[in-house]
Image 1 (cartoon, helix red, strand yellow):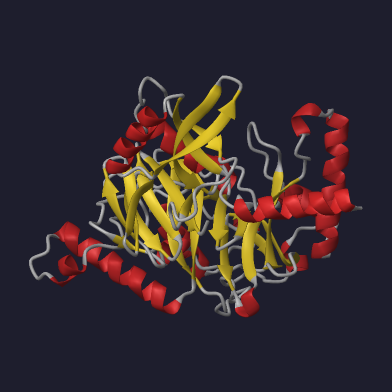
Image 2 (image 1 turned 180 degrees about the horizontal axis):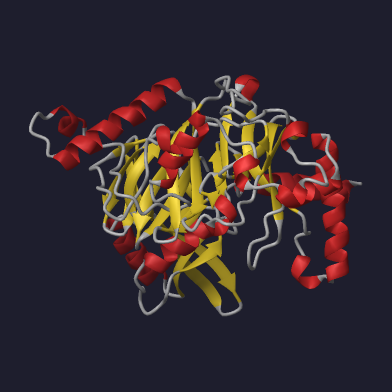
Length: 445
């Protein structure tokens, strides 16, 4: 029992003292004066360098390390950027033994790294209380919002055409058109929007150029979002619209074509549901078909339809598992979802079966009206985005320093992450590094 109690104590102690798990291993020497000289040189360049002594069979070894990072991805990228030191190449390492207390007050976690040429990134307000949204809207003349009436019977399936199916409301269609015109679809944007934050003096100048005016306008949007919203959503999606987007809202992450908060903190979202299992490439066709039958039967039951009625709504795209597109109301607290009576309509005669950056161009059943992020976007990084002189987050300030981000907290300033800082809010910062968008979160040690 004593031994068990001791192990539990040690595990708890390690969990407390090693909250930051990664660092950058720079170089090691058996000569302590030499090691301290290199440490001092690195510190003078802005690196938060420290030294630890490690006993070995050959004697004491002095390891020089830099920084503290909340995940390996942040440490690996930082190490990649550092030059070699005394012939040694820096590399990410576990911070065994911990990092000296007070070395740095915040540590970066690299949440995402996206290529601008293939991915679109959008940041927009996300209300924690939610704004009531219509789950259905009045359909165009001659169409129906009743799911059982909109979905053809088994006998009608072969005769159904795009012209006879239920379409989204006029409001939804116009929103989708707007989004599609924005070179949309995906995670790291290639658009020409300028950053949403800039120097306050620039914002007040009366002689701003058109580019500066756009930066100021986005700054005002971001400030308004900070005042009225407690959270923002970061949406990333492939530009070719072949896949749904990834949403990050605080600690919540999910995939969807589009999503919006509603009352009581719930979310209405349009999302894909694969009709094959994740390991579909390694199983037989018989097993795939069995799994497909089970999924479609489950969907049909939720929508009060038959499996035969649901079958025509399966999207079959090359090199992908087939899927259906459903609409659901999701509760993040209970992690439960209620499917609404709507299902995406493939368009056989259209490119990509009618899929756009926000999902299918039409639905059978209820006409779903979900706001699109393009309308409320406060920041959309591009290769031409201008970097503000300084960005302000929750208790910290960030500025650029070549390939690095300098973070200032109280009177302490150090190189903490990578890229050219473009946008910040709360504990989040977005930077641009070699045509890649980096999303950082700063955490307490």
